[in-house]
Length: 352
Image (cartoon, rainbow, N blue to C red; front, side, top):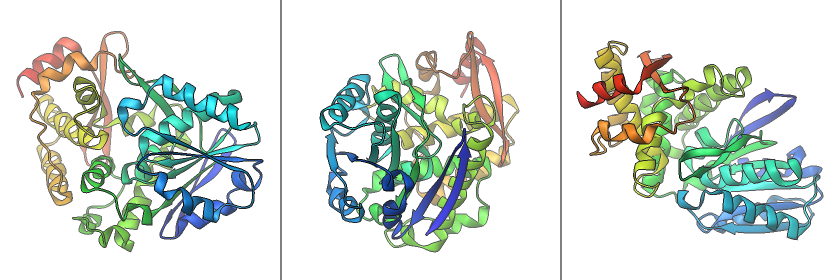
């Protein structure tokens, strides 16, 4: 088991991951000092609740099971969850556990930030994308019809515990979704080229030391960035590499056609193509990223014309006064924020 420590706004906590990491839940301060615990899962991850209960100390444990999927990541679900907390009599001394992927983590974290103006939340990710990215850093929120993650708050977890055994039964599509975020971290320079030898992934290699090191490097990179820029006004924006186009692709299809990780993969490829055309991204960098994606077994063509995405990018929360902010790469490990007008971007996208 490996541990990464993160300290933000007087909230120092640990991120633990590995085989057997679940047992660390019983030792988490947010659990030891709680008067009650509520485990929030969806219908896909509720099967893990008995394992979670099995390691918890003797205290009241409640359960809520949500409908799965991005289409249920709405303000209405947050209200329903907060009402469930109230019915169970949770107090400001209680702790909620988000047992699931990114959707469960985002909804539960946001509900925890709202209920009684904030109670503790432990993130217990069950998917690769949540373990490497969304469960870390305290970004919580839900979608609005106008765009993804427009309704939310920064609410740091009290702990993040990633049990790699939860990946054993993860569908291949969900594994590929997580690899989309790992590709992002590769582009940002989070782990060395040699670590690509951990791929392609199999059920066996996902439990290997080599792959655990990849996850460790990704989490450690994000932890460093979040410590420096918790509120996403500086370097943390680099973590949105591929997301501007990716979120637009999700929105274009009403969050039903692509997983978040698939959309991020396509968004990264589009960002690389735009960067090369603008003379920002070195062609060999684009080639290296495509090679890494191929080694991970990722599909890189969404079949959607990049120009079709522009109308769906207008509500992106990163944009300011008509200027679209894109995360681009000069080289592997050299990201930058590039500002471009909508008309300029339209010209570039139509030429791809």
